[in-house]
Image (cartoon, rainbow, N blue to C red; front, side, top):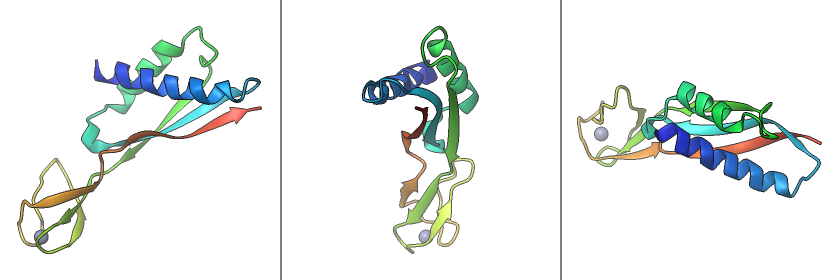
Length: 114
Ligand SMILES: [Zn+2]
């Protein structure tokens, strides 16, 4: 399962950070996930909870910020949002687009209780 592997990566990042803050407890993990990654937030939350049960992270909360897909048209240089994975410029109908946002998948910040 896609989300399980991603949850494991997130837990790895959190554990690495906590190593330099030995007395801290992680309260909230903020992650940014682009719509192009096809990650289902509910599934990722479920996977995260499953992995962190009975670990020091069991009480931490995963907060997911979903990033919409934004593209720039290489023909007319307009910027616009992509809906329903329809990769067509609404201004000139070109398919020569560059995705500017929507591919990200990273831990934005951790809220620690020190
Ligand atoms: Zn265009």
